[in-house]
Image (cartoon, rainbow, N blue to C red):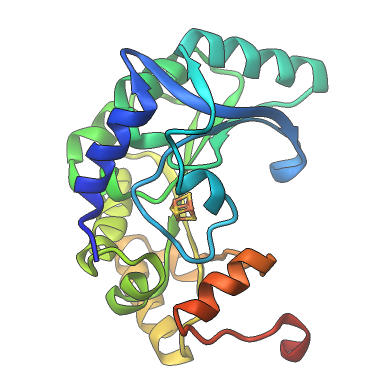
Length: 241
Ligand code: SF4
C-alpha cells in the first residue's frame, strides 16, 4: 500500500515542467452532450479498473509538455469548431499540477463551462485548493469516489484506506466554498448495506449527494485481468442483466 499524497508528489515531478503539464491527447468527446477534452498524464492512485491504466503506470514514457496557454487554445478551438459549451481535463488526475490547472481554468472564457473530473485526493488534503478554485464561476467539479468505504477504496486502488476520507473531505471542502460539485461512485464491488452507509455519509455533506451518480465500470480485457490477478470478485455484465 502507498500514501497517495506521497505518490502525487513523486508523479508531479515527472509530469510537470515549470507551468507546463504533460498531456497525451486532445479530442472532441461525446460525453456531457459534447465536450472538448484534454487527456493529461499522471495520477496519484492505481485503480485496478482504470481505463487508462497504460498511461497511469508509465508517465515517463507518454505525452509531452504543454503550457496552460497551449492547452486552453487547443480546447477552445475544439469547442468553437464543434459548437460545444463545455471543456474538461480527463485521462488521469488533473489536480496534480495546481498552478497549471488554476491558470488553465482562468484562461477559459466564462461562457464555457469547465468540468473538473478528479479523484479529490489533493483537494481533500488542503482546504486552500478548494478556496482557490472557488474564484471560477464556470467551474463544475465531479469527484469520483473509488469504492464505497475505506476498505473497498484500499482494495481497489492499492492506496492507504485513509485516502477515502480525503475523497469525502474534498466534497466537504468544495461545498464549503460554494463550488458546484457532485460525487460519482464506483459501487460495483460493494454490498448493498455498505452502499447505503455511503449514501448516509454523503447525505450529511449535502442532502442531494445521497443520490450520487453511479460510475460505470467498463470491463476491458486488461481491467478484467487486473481484477482477477488481485482476486477481486465482480459481476459479469451479462450475468447481472
Ligand atoms: S483515479 Fe482515475 S486516472 Fe487515477 S488510477 Fe484511478 S481511475 Fe485511473
